[in-house]
Image (cartoon, rainbow, N blue to C red):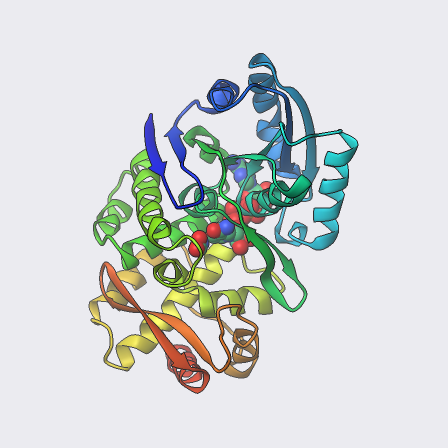
Length: 353
Ligand code: NAD
Ligand code: GLY
């Protein structure tokens, strides 16, 4: 079992990564506290696959288990679903001694994390990621959120989990497209911090434990120096500024990982055209996106995307920080006037990758 210790200022916790961990979830969680009530928050797909195994493991460790399953998909990251889940928890008579177990992908993790942050001003939270994307990114670092009609993740809180349990066996039931969506975030880590990740991704054997562990270590290092996203943490948003715009414009039909892939392609193309980035980055990105069947372009217009970029919560007055690739393994933050952001978008949309 690989264990990564995550120690941002607000809380210290472990991320456990191994096969077979779902059956040990109760035992692992009960080391943190005396088992009381556990509420599993999951989605309709993951419910059928893994809720029973988790329930049995928690019950064996002494928890009384409640469960609620939201509809699978980004549409569940909304205020109505959030309130329904909070109501359910209140009806279960949960107290601050109890714990939320977020069983699912990034949608469940973000929604359940926010629920845990809000219920009685904060109760226990264990993240159990079941998508590659959630394993390498959303289950770690404490960002929780729901969407508003006007923008993605506009309501949220920083709320670190008490424990993250990543059972790599659960990834075996992921549809290929969802596995690819997770690979987009893995590619991101290669560009921002560690180009050796590209060798892993291009090799014939995808070593899940090793790749997840390396990505979690990178995320740990970044969030420990900037938990509240005021500086270095924004590197984790490589490809996200334009990616979020694509995702939102598509009404969330284009999944997060695919949208990030498009966003990375647009910003890298623009950075190379502006002479800011080693052209080798474009070659690497092109190979990796093709290898994992990820998209690199969008049919949305510059006007449509720019209009959505303006709702980005990282915009401060007339400036927005773009994450610009420089060379494999290095991106820089560039705080730019909004007009210059539009120029990047224009150059990114022009021509093929
Ligand atoms: P998701 O949670 O919607 O999961 C994708 C699909 O896979 C869903 O249909 C789900 O039911 C299904 N699924 C999940 N696990 C499965 C399994 N083991 N086997 C079969 N099917 C399974 O999407 P996602 O890509 O995991 O996460 C995307 C979300 O994460 C977005 O809302 C994004 O904003 C958020 N996110 C948050 C952070 C953060 O730091 N908090 C970081 C990145 C992304
Ligand atoms: N996924 C971006 C972050 O955690 O900051």
